[in-house]
Amino acid sequence: MKTRSLVSIDDLNTEEITKILKLAAEFEKNPVQDILNGKVVATLFFEPSTRTRLSFESAVSKLGGKVIGFTDASSTSVSKGETLNDTIRTVNNYADMIVMRHPIEGSARYASEIATVPVINAGDGANQHPTQTLLDLYSILKTQGSLDQLNICMVGDLKYGRTVHSLLMAMSRWRTSFNFVAPDELKMPDEYKLYLDNLGLEYHETADLASVIDNADIIYMTRVQRERFSDPMEYEKVKNAYVLYDHMLSGTKSGMRILHPLPRVNEINPDVDANDKAYYFEQALNGVYTRQAIICTLLGLK
Amino acid sequence: MKNMNDPKQLLVSAIESGTVIDHIPAITLFKVIKILGLDRIRNQITFGTNLDSKTDGKKAIIKIAGKFFEDDDINRIALVAPNAKLNIIKDYQVIEKRVVAVPDTITAIAKCMNPKCITNFEKVTTRFRVVSKKPVALKCHYCEKITDQERLEII
Image (cartoon, rainbow over all chains, first blue to last red; front, side, top):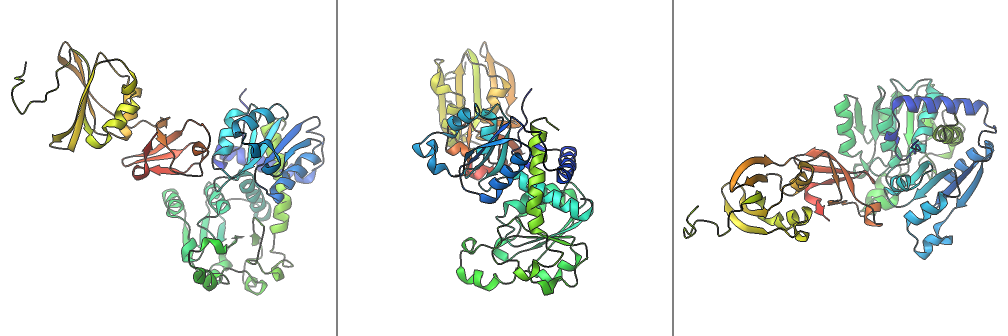
């Protein structure tokens, strides 16, 4: 049987996504189990990502599995010039599953074609990070009770933000309406708007955050990075326009929740953290359950 | 036989049997030769280039003696010669005319335009899904980025 890998969110159909989210809810109720006893998961982090790696390692450890791997390619044979092909072929002998993050785009797809064990893409450059998308979906489902007919307000860097693009594509499987709030330089690329047009899904673009948040079921915040601007003056002009403060939330829906893929810098003021609508730290916890569900699904254990 | 002294006639002899590929843009002639591997076969090949064409500006033509192509092979040139026409010759007669069609997938011909794509770092055979045929747009199987006609490079 051909092993299943998870490289791109499009590798899963809607039914499979729904199944993984359901399984994640089961793991949330019962996160410590012995399902992965005797299994070894290799976490190959060719570039550092503390949060994602710890979340995977926590997911595996709670299910009784062992983790091997590295957290930085500079301490490995990669720094001696080993090809990805050779690294994957070798690690494939030691593990029942490979979780990898790599700065080169398409590296995870390539690895999944070399490996005979399932490969999970934990981020390949600016391309895909499907487990983030699934944990975002799980967080939305859990807080809203359904994924259908929601209004999602995406804020910040909508041009380069990999997480917002994947989330948009995934949420477009349901009847979702979107608000895009971004500075001119970081607007949602046309290809995604065209994609929504073709599906007949509604979206609005604005540079004024306050004008749209009262309608939102989910506010998805992202970081506006200084290095994205060709003109530093432009950054200075807009940097505070995309910051969420607690006083802005008074008119928002009671069930609305704020998500953020983290790390946060200054785009959500710390005074929001105490508000019940702040959900980003719970969202990170949901990542553990979602990854438990993904790992067990790909290994055929659930 | 045509009068070979007629100055308007091509000085390229007719072939007894084989394939004539006409209406190749002159600028992509050598790409077509490379894609079809004509630089590595032993058949007799004649070609002409920078020929005047009523429809294509400057065109090129290739005659390959004793060689017949499968559709899958010939469609590989559609990326660089979308209007190419094939004449299949037997006994000096055209027995069949064919046009090329852009295939649904492109393997091992085009280069991904994304400098951060794995195919530009390691020895990986490039693979694309054709997302648009006219103008050509290719989606990389690996990095999922689009390579369009303007940035299309043949390996």
